[in-house]
Image (cartoon, rainbow, N blue to C red; front, side, top):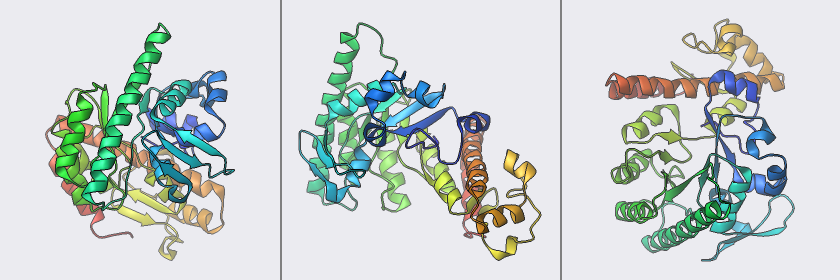
Length: 347
């Protein structure tokens, strides 16, 4: 899922995302709550109408963003009291409030509020966060179902639970079992890819997906590098999101079938090849590496636009290739090829 934090994927229009074949975007509850406000978005017809996007939208709960405001928040069993990074105003985000905001936004998939902690973490801290996450998930689920009944109509939104447990296999399994009792239509694996080794992320993911129902979506949050994605798919993950494709693009890092290209390097000043000779995106069909390098050197906005277009296409195409590889029983071979391409580092 391309990440559109403030109801926009940086440097890309909705038309471009449609052309790229993006079927679902991720938007950020925390940021949209603070600006322009969920009630305004509700008044304007919901997030789909507001941003003119008629395909699917997933909204996160804001938990990770609040987690990152270490000096501006206080966590209690009630919820998270925090100060806005915009104007310093104080707010209380509870499980019910996070669900209320996302119902107002009208996203297709809404995440419950969870407690994300730093890793590595002491077991006691992980146990406390797991307990709070389960309690919050229950409150969020009850609020969501009450609102659905109160309105007397079918709410067109799926609410996902989020498995926590840090890097303790037993706690991950226990978190998954507790959330299964709440009967969510989909489940996410949270609190990973926050500094722990990739192997640990894979291990914890496998512990969780072994317990989650195969017929319901399984979502690993906040990942990852191209060569890592196949490892997660192989462990039962269906959905992923990451800011990396667009963030790397804005920093002149391009992903290709031959590995990373750091386009600012002097070696590309006269390179007339496309970014990726094996790519059929609109950028690779038209522009050269020399031209893109020039745009970055000149500080042109177009550099970020073209690089972002290519990187998002690359990620979406990798996902397409995963689906194809699974169909033909070739996922492990494809994963090995990806790792080999990126083993040598950037060009």
